[in-house]
Length: 69
Image (cartoon, rainbow, N blue to C red):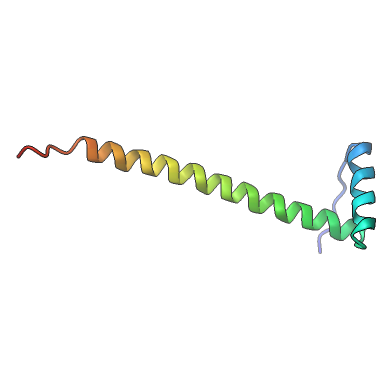
């Protein structure tokens, strides 16, 4: 494990601490899971944008094809 120092807004920390206690998890585990979830979400967003760009490029390629010949 890597130890890091992070500045978190007091309100975010309090909410995280409250939620982690309700889930019977340590705040450390809760924050790790939150970061994992956010990373997954960001990777999906990157993939979604890449697929959209590629789809538009393919569509443009099809539009340039001369079907009359």
